[in-house]
Length: 376
Image 1 (cartoon, rainbow, N blue to C red):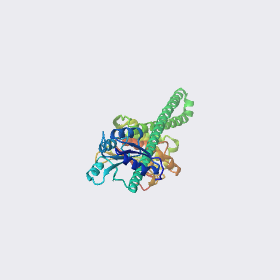
Image 2: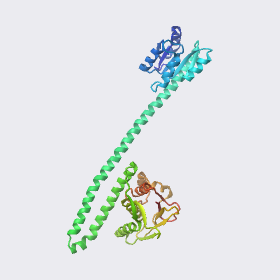
Image 3: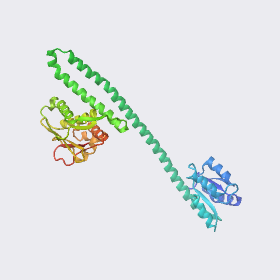
Image 4: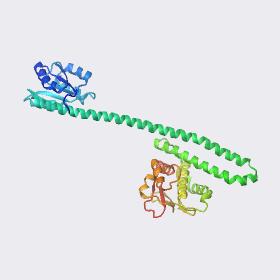
């Protein structure tokens, strides 16, 4: 610590000769010195000026040094100010009590120049480090608050955009239905496949929009699951049928195996339909034109069910097995050449299953393609 830096030092001493001696030793160092002669005045000066260090005598009028030290150390605004107690040379009891009330150090009278300067410089250096840590802590807290505000703004913006996207999608779907109702037989046969494709694409887009909304609600803990007994076979049949209706999936094989003892599962119908839809869409998107997909549901020993969706497409490397469910890792995985479906489908699936009290993972032991395992 360089000499001459303008540190403020408060001297609290009722003996003028000792004050003069301390000024004589400390003034050449360039410190900003203030002296008071009683404990009450010391408290006022500390509150007003917040010195960098206090040299505090024990025997003071109005309020002794022990009381001054104890009060300052119990005050959150002043507890970090170093205090050096000025004690009698052989009074061990005073030295012990000085430490008990929170003093940082003590110096025996009569003062020795080298010792005094060494202790003052040491404690001022520690005070400087402490102040720097405090400043950094405040800066980090401000930056953290700023990041939290930005994150809240981002979530609000996403929710707003997603909400606004839903309206035109509903309009598109409604108008498609009106078109179908108003067509004659010849026009209906000709345009049916095109309107069906438009409708399916709008449904896919709507599914991605709703997934985003649900991801946000799950993270905020505001989603309300409407659980009921679901016919899992019916859900899988409907999702599979819609998937096979797409021209690009016509030649893909989808094999379904469901334990005969399983008919109903408990869950939110809308959410579970989208989970199955997202998983099958991922598999279909990942395999070749004549690729194979299988869905297998079996009962576990603890009365839970195990649902596995397997494809024989491009295998996602093990290093991405956890990242594949993370919102902000989707771009990285796609940049590495792996197909993971549209939007945040897999992120939604894992969060939705966990919201139901279940679990979801990508099977590390699967030899070919990918196998997603859900337990409910």
